[in-house]
Length: 390
Image 1: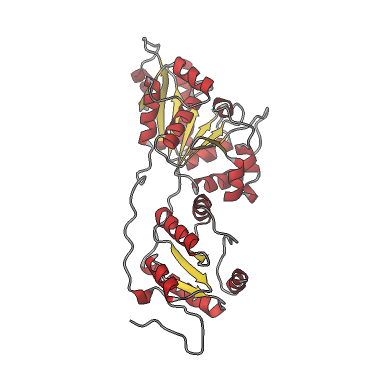
Image 2 (image 1 turned 90 degrees about the vertical axis):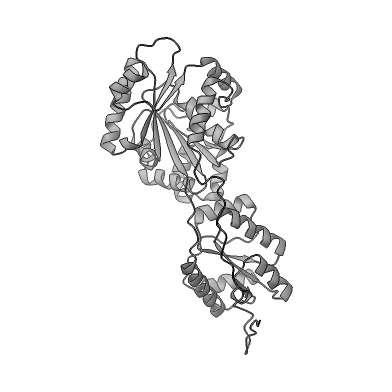
């Protein structure tokens, strides 16, 4: 009943309500909801003080500075003191009136102007694109994603964007699950709850594979963009394994990428295809974000050396990965990313380490301290409202 009264009051106040929950969310549900919905503040029931405390502590780690307004039927000194120690600045005592809510909004707006909360950081997106098919791009993308998720414990999403010949579903031995195509086709109804039903899990790694299709689908760029934005709100890093076809679908991911890894081998035909890709990147205005990865570099003298490849591409390869068919084949048999104990695995781990977000592990700045009187402004309305005194 208290929640219903609050919702009725909210309908009379000029606020956009992105989400209303009838229960206390778990830590993962709270994280996804806040990252996707990006609220200016939260109104949380204090009916269960233990659950309320857990939410406040989770928010301190997730988004320090995001304001929480409490509401509940109890306004005893014990409850208010507990809320004060949690840093709660406004508490609404039920039954809540429209005037109470308007006062609370003014207080929140004023505090937010003085102490704006840091904006939530959106995921870094990295695209892996082959000069031509069969150069080992998926092996590198899977390996880098696996290291970030398992060794660095970073919230990582791996997307197989090769819609005509994606192999990640088979590489990681994923069971029948939804694909990136399903996500794009349902983009208009997609939210963080539906997202959990679409992604597959491989250990700590979330995966959207390409599915199985014998034709290249016609997709709207706006729908692809919606999926990318929802994904970026929920993860720290996204790795996308793209096909060599520079379709509008592929171009949308490339434009959103922080860095593009163009994968080639030292074969002459492959290097010339890489040069063609570089020319297209310049046309798209994204060539400055491209790093060339020279994969499957043979241990013996090849037709082309890394220096000769750089000369053809006018873009010196940043990383070379030696040929290691044995490790790659074993990883495929195991349905796992390449382990870092091999030379190839260590090179992949080094690339993954370079992509670890700079903010990872950073401690939030301490919140400014406030006097007790600044915390509670809205006691239950009465002819002569009770005010806290020193």
